[in-house]
Each structure stands twice: as structure tokens, then as C-alpha cells.
Amino acid sequence: MKQPVIFIAKGKEEIVCRLKKSLYGLKQAPRQWYNKFDSFMKRNSLYKCNADHYCYIRKFESSYIILLPYADDMLLA
Image: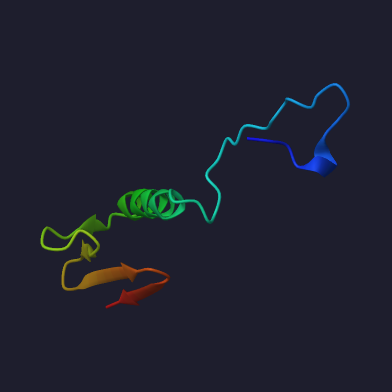
């Protein structure tokens, strides 16, 4: 890993920055987004369906909420 030329300071040519968070565009970004989304759904009492792990369900006395996320879209029934 090398510093960009415009950020090199005299005497610190070998120093580089360490990333503390995943950034958009990295391979891990979708996984990190899904983990955050999944924990939010669990906090709000929506649970994964046994048949499809991307389907979230919340049961009420006489109705259901069904949520299906797909890429950047979501179906709510």
C-alpha cells in the first residue's frame, strides 16, 4: 500500500493509513449492509422465515407483515 503523491509529507513517506470501517465498493460492503439490516429487523420483532432466509415475517393477532428485501428493492405485504 502506498500513499497518494499529493499526501506525502517529508520524513513520513513510508506511513500509510489503516481503514477502520468497510467502504462502499468493497467486497464486504453488501455483507455489512445485510448484517446491519438483519439486526434492525430482529430489534423490531421481524423474524426470518424458515423456508427463505431473506423473507422476514411479523405476526399479529389477525394479520402478518411480510418483508422481502432484494438488492436495492423491497417488497412489503
